[in-house]
Length: 313
Image (cartoon, rainbow, N blue to C red; front, side, top):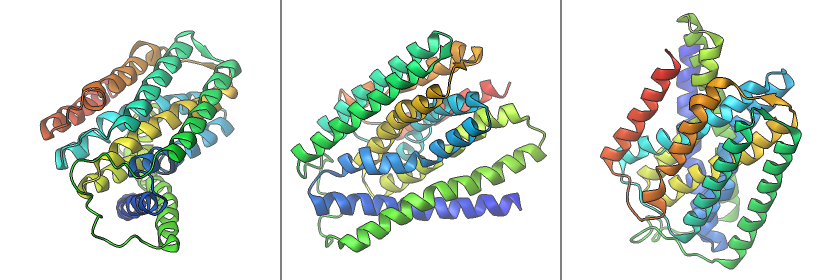
């Protein structure tokens, strides 16, 4: 049964990821804003849905540490795995000024989150700070979307340039199907993988630190892989940056609001710093215009595997 859930989850993730990318690009062309801007908003919030579900369930079950670990683990997976795997398929390039601004916001949010955690306990005051940051971010994105028109920063002609722009109904159907299908597919895959892991004798704590964080990042992985295959590096990068911002500001904020939440010593000694390092390794790509080559993708994916190996010791 677990293997059937894994297979169904993979199929649903692949199909929903493709629909979400198609819908995001179609929406961008329809309303006259860049695909990057749509990926930073619609796509990133949609692919962060599994993290939100896990957080709410963890808070209702009285285990906010699970939610906190999911925020950190998901952000690590989003950079090293979710960008590393697509880079092995197609070279990932930066996507212009809009991404640079959002990336700097992501780094700033990461630094603030690490600083709040370094105190040792997340409090409702910490949550208020993070949620106010989310409100400011959303206000900035809305103003930017109104100010900028179709300025797709991907080099060369868009792969969809010669295709007719889909109708509004079709775009809405793509987006809804993608946004609904991704969390369902991730849940099926996560449930199946968790069952297999338990059958193999892994503890619940190890499952939470590895499968939960990696599993809730599967929508981002599905979206970025499909985006890479369709030549949309801006959607791939924008989805990761936007999703990490949502993880820290929304999910971290909700977790802290339910506080006080003691920060596990292991997070303070290792995981938070790995998350910060993962955010900073994108500096050459986003700020200096470098590319993530296939070799870079292999190294990033390998670094994530090494991180998991440390957790499993």
